Length: 169
Image (tube, rainbow, N blue to C red; front, side, top):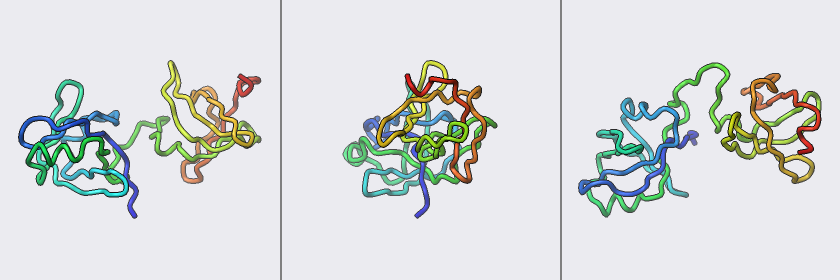
């Protein structure tokens, strides 16, 4: 099965013709203008839709999909994730990573294995990596360039050099 990534979430219908109001979950909202198809996902089902139009509106994106033409059809998708195939993601600049690429990576502090990344939280500066260590204990580690030794995306291994005592906080 082809991997998908979420770029938005349906909030509710918008208008009378079945348009969908979508909360953005992408740093690239302009990407909607280039899309021809999107997928709506609500476990366990995923359905593909031809994208007729997309336009920004009050901090959201409004989607007009080919076969959703009424308020009731649109309402049925409220809460669904708007997805695209992972191979259609826009490239990120060097030194930047998609959260979905970080989740599940094994974290090492120098030569000590810490555990897998379970989530990435926004931080006041650097994002915080939620890492499961020591048989279930969770730690938050700033994903700061100053701590990064190496990130091997292909092997899904993140090597850091953390300051003494950071893991004890």
